[in-house]
Length: 469
Image (cartoon, rainbow, N blue to C red):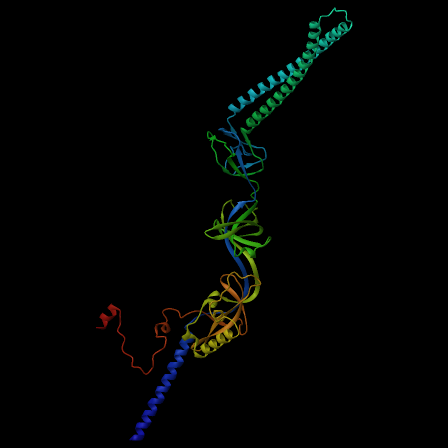
């Protein structure tokens, strides 16, 4: 009887061991499949810097008015239509006319003042000739008076002698006065000419002409509107000189500006044509920085061809500056570098090895925190061609996971280049935890013993419970 009992207990024990082995194997299979994974792939990676900007004409001329007055009319374009938005204009084409009445009156008054000044100059010259003749007469009288006085005949009284002398001196002074009057008259003529020139220029400014050949992208006045010109010229028209050459003014953060250089290729899109990619190149990095809420940005000019005419002024552009390129590189999704396991997922042996590495790093003078940082999501930012950092990816190892040290290279924001020992194409790396809703996700993380009695689970669906009853 005792033998039978021993045999029965042995059978029960062997069955329990078999059931436990089956449960452990099944648990390991579920554990190995409970992570989201992605294979290491081979492909091309292009590292870029993303920024937004505005499409601008390459050269814009702001045409203004230098005089005040009412807009009487607009000029006509090549199609014999009044100048308006999108009108193509040529150099010196009439754009608008301002009421010239007041300026014409000023010009006429200035013309009359010039004629008067010129007449005064003629009169001054004639007066000089007259004064010179009187000097000659006074000179003769003075010479005769001196001759009589020298004879001692007493034929010339002292008072007469003095009078001839005074007349001669006065005549010479009058010549100098006449000469000075000529200079005054000449100055008056010059002033009148200057006034007339200014009045004529103001009169000419009443006709607004295009200074360049181009396309009108803005018309800021209407017929009958009064233009007031104060310290600065009033803006009437905005003319783009050549819409076949456009620029994109992109605001780039100071952290990325060091990766940009003249001639660098750029790709950008606009909302008006979301499925088309436009290409250009960096033309200039402006040195004048702008600070907004403690963020420093620089304006980068991107030059692009617009022969198709699709790019319109002031469209918003989403630009990408190419900072690095790697062909046929081994790469993983960025999520694989960000994912970090829990201590329970790593396993005892891996935890012991990890602790030993941290202690070894600290003993050699390194920072343990820095050493541990490599186990986390050490994903580089916008990496350039020469920027490489250390990180880790995680792969399944039975019921646990293990880390593979890798060197991180270029990233395009979705995938990142990696290299290292054990990294090969097709290697499944973990990108996330267990998918929600799976059986393994619903089970306790530690698992239940197969020998624990299972209680019946009550159905929580009210309708199903009612049916059971």
